[in-house]
Every structure is written in C-alpha cells, then in structure tokens.
Image (tube, rainbow, N blue to C red; front, side, top):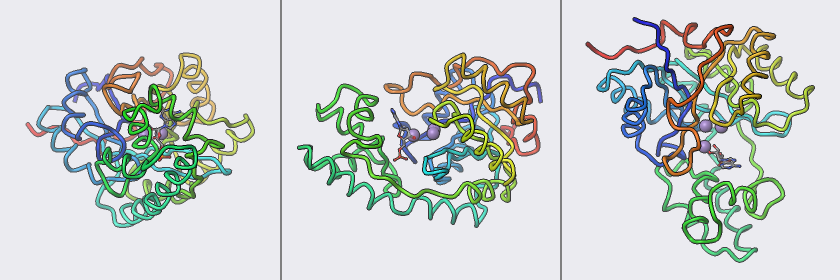
Length: 288
Ligand code: AMP
Ligand code: MN
Ligand code: MN
Ligand code: MN
C-alpha cells in the first residue's frame, strides 16, 4: 500500500445529522481526492456497512468510525472512535444507550421554542431527520432556517440552541471512560474531536487529556474543519507534548452548511504520528 496522504476521518451522513446518504458522502470524498476515509456519524454505527461497501466500490481505503457524545466536567465533549469492530456488542449497546433520550429531549426543546413563539418545531425538525433515533439540534436548526426564523444554521445556534437560549435542553451523554472503553475494546483508537471548540481553561483541558489517556485514549484531532491555523499549530504541540496520535478530518455535514469540504484540509505536520499509522492493521483496503 502506498502512503495514504489524503485521509479524512471525520464526517457525517443522514444516519446522524448530515444531509447526504453514506454512499453520496463516499462519492464526494472520492471526488475530492480522499484516499483513506472514515464515516463518523454521531452515536451510531448503523451506516458503517454501507460506507465500507461504497468506499470499496470507489477504490478508497476505509476505517470504521463514529463520534460519541460525552459529558465531561458538565460540558459536552466529542470522542471520535476509529478502526473498531462495528459489530462489537458492547460498543453497539453503549451507543444505543447514548442515543436514548434524544426523542424526549427534542420534545422539551420544542416546548422551549414554543414559549418564544416558534410553533411545532418538533414536527418540523422531524422532517429533516434521517434516523429516528438521532434527532439532533442540527435538525431543529435546518427547520428554523427553512421556516424563515433564522438566516443560517450558526445563527440558529447563537439565538436558540446554545446554553441559556430558549431551545437548549441540557442532556447527560456517555461517560468519557465508557466511550473510550467501547472503542478501545472493540479494537479501535479513541480520539478527542475538535479540541479547539471546547471552552475549557488550560487546567480543564489538561484534566480532559490526562483522564482520556488514563482510560486508554490515544489520539487527538489536530487538523479539523473547525480549527483555525493557530489552533492546528497549538494542538500540534499538544499532541507532541502528550505523545498523542494525530487525526485529520473535515467534520463535513452538508454541501450547503459545511465550511470545510471533504478532503480539503491542510496536511498534518511531519513531526506528528498520524493516527492511521497506528491503525494500519485496521484499515480495510478496497477489493482488487
Ligand atoms: P446535539 O448532538 O443534538 O447536541 O447536536 C450537536 C450538533 O450540532 C453538532 O454535532 C454540530 O453538528 C451542530 N452544532 C453544534 N454547535 C453548532 C454551532 N454553533 N453552529 C452550527 N452547528 C453546531
Ligand atoms: Mn453534527
Ligand atoms: Mn463534534
Ligand atoms: Mn462531527
């Protein structure tokens, strides 16, 4: 196998809160030059078999993936799992439990929005949902934009869906220890997603990284769609300081919303060890 230089190991399909089917995400990744791909839907591995098959048809190498919602220190942290057995029973059950409660939360979100005059948001959001177990804030955001309440998705989050805003409902997600264990015991590597997006103090961030590593977590996203160049530089140093494997992924959700397209990312610094080097045995090559 030649060196896989364009890896995109973070993106979403309709199986969670993306707008494209897994096959269409694969096609777009391939068209953009991605050689090693992972579909990482939120809290769900139901799209893995389709993604893997599509990658194979297109000649792309594939790593299984998912992005797990975790509650850490009262905040939401995302953990990307890569290269695991997507049929592992403990992983599948853990993710099922993590998805649980989304329906009830969505109804409460709609109640909050009704109080500020936005009617029938639950029914509205449902129309955008591809997976009934995975109704998310993103689906509400798309409904609010299309119904003319807001200009774009980030505008909805700012005005309605973040802490302290009328449509925000706090939720208890998976524990960090569990998320890391599900991925690791299924043969994969756990990665801290988009570390630059959390509002952690340096002390809190240090606690996250050290706890994550104590549970067996080994990687961190350095190059991602939501990092500035300065953040990528900062987390390059973090990865080196802690001896973490480095990951790269667009976090693509939709051709209309995502500011970073699949595969269109800067390269990882040559000083880093890419997470896919440590996952060589878990990479699924396309059939000949
Ligand atoms: P949920 O898991 O239902 O809390 O929804 C989280 C999802 O909302 C994330 O995976 C992102 O896709 C999206 N999201 C979160 N914050 C923002 C934001 N500020 N602007 C746009 N999308 C966001
Ligand atoms: Mn998302
Ligand atoms: Mn995320
Ligand atoms: Mn994501």
